[in-house]
Length: 213
Image 1 (cartoon, rainbow, N blue to C red):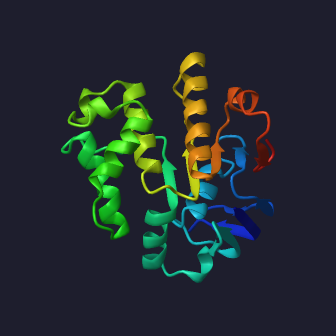
Image 2 (cartoon, rainbow, N blue to C red; image 1 turned 135 degrees about the vertical axis):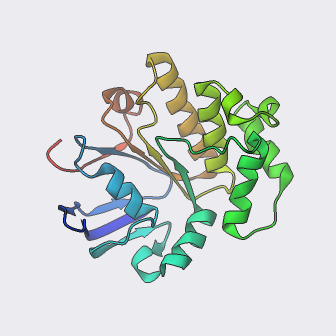
C-alpha cells in the first residue's frame, strides 16, 4: 500500500513540487502520469526514500518514510522495495548472477544463491547467469533488471518509464512481465509513464496524475 498526505518536495534553488494526496491498497497497480518535468521521477524518488519530503508524508508498505533516518531508509528500501529505473545500472564488471547477489549485501542479509537462480528462472533468463551485462540484448538486460527487482520479494515495485524505448510488441510483453511478477509477490506496482500504451494495456490500474497532464 502507498499513502501520501500534503506531500511536497522543494528543489534547492529550483521549483517546489506539490503532489495530490494518494491512497493505494496493497497489490494494486498505479500509473503515475504527467508531462515531462511534471515530477514523476521526483515522486518515485520520494516513494523509494531516495529524497526527503519538504512537507507532508508518504507511507509505503506500512512504513512512514519521514519517520526514518537516511541510513534507515537505505536498509528499508533494500528489503521491501523493488526498483526498475530507466537506466538499468547493471555492472559490467560482474556477471548477471553477481549483479543480483549484490541485493543481499545492500539489505545486510546473507546471500541466497538459490534465490538468485529462482529469480532468473522466473524471468526466463537462467541461462544468462554467467554472462556480463554487455553480452545481453536490450530485452535480456531488462529481464535481468526485473529479476533483480523482485529478488527480495518486495512489497512495492517501482518502474520508471519501462516502455519508453520499446516497440509495441516488446512493450506489451514487458508490461505483462511486470504485472505477473507483482502478482506473484502481492506487491503494489507503480509505473511512471507518459506512454498511452501502458494505460491501454492495464485498464484496471489506478491513474495518478501529476501536474496538468
